[in-house]
Length: 316
Length: 159
Image (cartoon, rainbow over all chains, first blue to last red; front, side, top):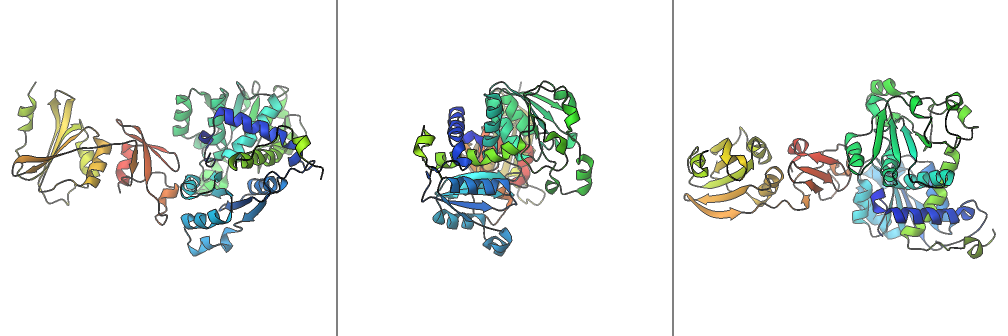
């Protein structure tokens, strides 16, 4: 395959196979086993926007598998400030590396990069567009908790307008026949073209501003931060900031196995009192970014993950 | 119902120029906008709207004198009127019939309307690619950002 730009680049069977690979790679991700499947390979990290988890988990994933990483570094100190086009940057890094992980503030940048690159591109977020590697780790976390992906009821809450994680995730969940609840302030509703597209693919969708009334029969509540940086108007941001604040006292009547997820960083949408509940899963979710990205790096570089990782790996 | 021949007489025959027939009813003004024909245009332009048509029920027709459409203009026309008939007239006779082709993808005809799309950076050396999702009513999807957009949005973004 080429790169991973949107979830449409993967079939359901490929998604399941990658999640299976990721599960087998868990002891490697945790540092319990050394398995240098990607020795000699180089990942180029091109982050044109700030990133903590995505960039670091890509780097960790590559290094846990024996590979190496080169970084664009801070955009302010790169050729980008001298006016270099994305096309030229990609041509250069394409020659230096075997695979590229990229985040860019503009939608469609990852597809553009893939069109002009020889090596696979992993889209680590393009504006308010797609974030498929986040979706893979989200699916991994959901399957880890519920043992399946099919037929779950998933509430997506917060900034559904600009939140690229929820755009990619809702497409993927629709393919697994999940029931979706979109809970957001009016201003931050899921874009109409995405809702239309999901509906055309048979999605069961409920849209509401009332998150709290939709929680009790949910299997997953996926909270998102209202992203100040996506607003050009401070007043508009002020109208919706702090729209949802999930507290442990809101969870008295939820399902016992319901999990709360969040792509992080959070601001005030999940109160720290939730962290100690059995529902909180966001820190495991962040860790799962390493294992999901390990499986994706192997897949895109055409490296098979052994069926018996314990046997193939060695102790550190 | 009037015959097609009769309805064509609503405007006089032109000596040289282009006749665009079988434009979907009510879309002639959009065609003019897409072709850049406006109040600055000096050549005579005739337009009839809501003419009875056997094939289409009703249709619009445009005649532009002393101007022959280019391939680029035909590509733009294809977005509004993918089934229009275009005839080049020289000395009162049809000298050439031009074919409109709205394929599966439109390249370098219109720009994506999403303001934050990578295509809105004029310095990037990229082709403007939009996939045809629906011919009529027109819906195109940007190859890069994936946004689906309609004719009303796109008419302002002609290249």
